[in-house]
Image 1 (cartoon, one colour):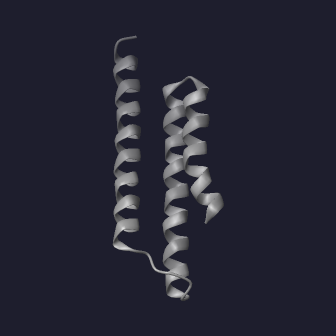
Image 2: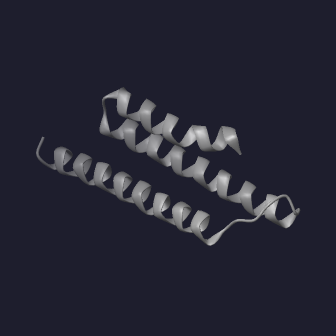
Length: 86
């Protein structure tokens, strides 16, 4: 779980450092995949009796999904606009 959690901001940092919107959008997608992995691991831990996925945790996860989706959509829209204008 720790590795998946660290991977989320790490992918965002790497993508931002690449310089291109296409690369950044790809790494945002990778960050979302890590968030999916973390959520799954939390659900499994709960099912196995190791802890509880609280409402607050689930709300944070949903908020992060929304933010990552918005960022990816924005990057893709910017790329589309640039491609249309040369």
